[in-house]
Image (cartoon, rainbow over all chains, first blue to last red):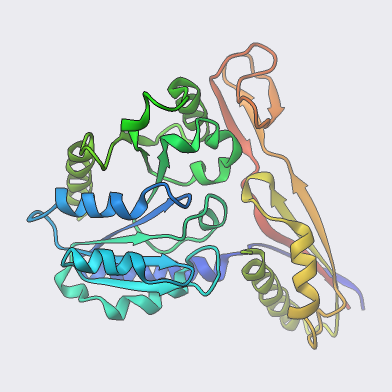
Length: 219
Length: 113
């Protein structure tokens, strides 16, 4: 007998469920977790290192590094003296909740206040996969151009904070900040933005202070 | 590339519901994809042949209902589809617009026998 079965279920519900489990683990350990997304070369790792420096002595931080195949980023972070674990996605274009779940036992959770998860460099796929973090942030760097919100709207929809990075390059590359910000605002009216230069340190304190307040408010 | 993971999830959910109703075969799977969900339907169909092989969904035809991203103008009430050039209202040029459709990514139904 032929019949039609109504389902109406989100295709990624299995991942969402695993993401919820991850969040429970974070919450039980009193950890605030952040999913950091950006295109390749936006400066994710440098931004993370500078964030670690800005937060030194204020929060105990661990890092999960997502990458296609190498462990270069985790080594850089580990060299800064922090617990870091590398997830190699084996060519997969994004992290998912299961990969994060598998990485957690490698971190000393009871000794951490904050986990930064560096997603795979990509402006499309990571937006669809929740990891169980408390906050998603996006780093958009000046040299990528001011049209990115218009070209990758999905990525700008689900993030809470936007880091506009490499602002020290503004005098050298064409970038219409009004056009850029207008696109961002329409896609995500409640987003908080932080213009920064990880290189000169400009804007890093404002970001770090905001983050500390955010974490206090969450606990 | 993430279509592979998506395809696996489509299969898992479809099989779960088909088994519940003791179906012998899944003929159609109806999927709703919003423009902002960044999904490529050709890839899903491509992966299907490998992933669904040997299951009761092997011969299923996947129907994709694509939903364009739509915006509504807060100033004049005009609704319009997303363009990648500008988000301004094409009628009154206001930038006070908001997105109200296009994030969907779900299985709407399956047809079985």
